[in-house]
Image (cartoon, rainbow, N blue to C red; front, side, top):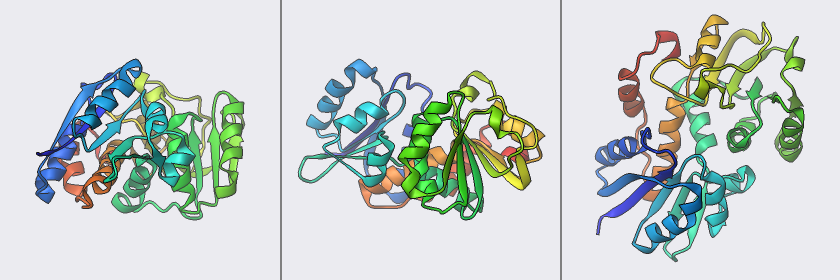
Length: 280
């Protein structure tokens, strides 16, 4: 029987994951199927039970299912335990389900390997204090930046994350207004503002010389945050397509034990978009 994988989400029609994993399978000569299934939150447990009981090997889970997948897993990787969210489920030889979160390592790999952006000893600003930020904090802190500031409209949510992850590195919290007079080497947008073509309320002069901007969201056109980064003369102003491919590669390796090459897949997907050179 052919090994089967899927991505669960709601909505899911826009997902590039099936195509990415098919490209990985072709490249590595793996015989598998990977489908997209529209699964609302209320149906998650039943759908996951059904998938695995019928021989399914692994699942990816997108918004709004990552917290449910975290609860569903029989055991968790360290990074999933910290993030309190799971984007990858894998059926183990003993039948138990492992939950992992590959979002953070996907981001780190895109930044450091694909764009040669250094994270160690850098001042990093993360915009937003929701689940997306929680999922990327530990892998970024493992790169030993000099400081991370988490900024959020509601300061208390940023305070909570800064306290919870304090043992992993130098973390501070802020609201957007108090960012004035600060400068950063890398700004990561982990808010949902780009999905509605909006920007967080950012003061001017946030970027140091040679600084970079990165939006976890991605689209066929530059997001509002990517456009802002270009307007602020960032060295790179990138969106999250590379992170999407890299987190998929980490999931693929977890499932198949093989690391696919991500560069040709990222290049192919970028060639189908309409991005200016400074944001590609």
